[in-house]
Length: 258
Image (tube, rainbow, N blue to C red; front, top):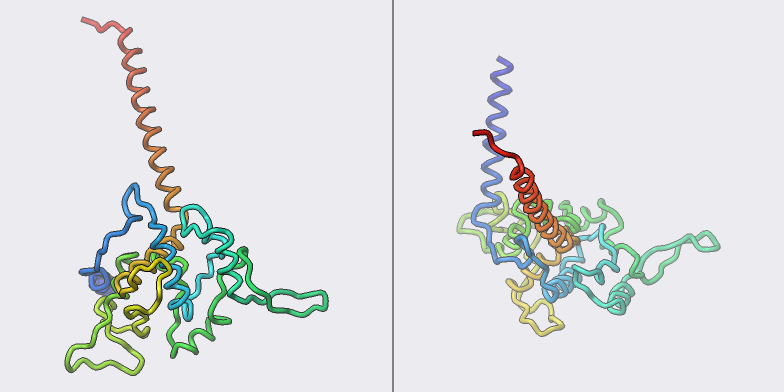
C-alpha cells in the first residue's frame, strides 16, 4: 500500500512539474539573439546599453555579486575602455579596511572591486521589498528555464489583469509568470533611460539590451568557448581525413585472397 501511495505521489509531482514547466515556457517571446547558435557573438552596443539599463534601473534592487567592474573591459564583453571602467567604478563606494588605526573606512570603488550590492545583506533586501527576495542577477539567465527568452518575456509580460481577476496588495499581473502573479512591479517604461548612443529607449529595446547584458554575465566566456569549439571540430575533421587516407594506403598494400 505504501509503495502504491509513493508511486501515486511521484506521478502526481512529475505531472504537476511538467504542467508548471509548460506554463513557464509556453509561448515565450523569442526576439532572436545575436549570441545564440554555433557562431553566436554578443552585440557590443547592446551590451553597453544593457549595462546602462541594469545600472540605472535594476541595480536598485538586484546585485551582481560574481562580477567585478574590470570585467566590463574584458574581450568578449561590453569592452568599455579601461578609463571608462575606472569612471564607472568610482561612482560607487565600498567599505574597506581596517586602516592603520584598526577602523573600517569608505573609499571609491576600483576596477578590481566586485559590483557593489544595493543591500548590506539578504535579510535587508527582503525587508526592503515586502518579503520578496530580489535574486542576484549574475547567473539569472542560466538559472531560469527558458533562459534569455524567459527573462525577456517576463519584462515584456506586464499587463492589466483580466476583469474579476483579484490580486493581493503588492502583487502584479504578468503573462509569463506561473499563476500570472509577480511581486516585482513593472521596472520599465518608454524613455526611462537616455541611451548614450541615441538609440530609442523603448520597453522592447531596453528589455532586449538588459537581457543581452545578463546573458553575458552568466556566460562571460561564451565567445571564446564558441571559437574553441569550432577549432576543435576543424581539428577533428582534419585528423579524421588523415586517418582515413592513412588506413586506405596501408590496406592497399595487402593483397586480397581470391
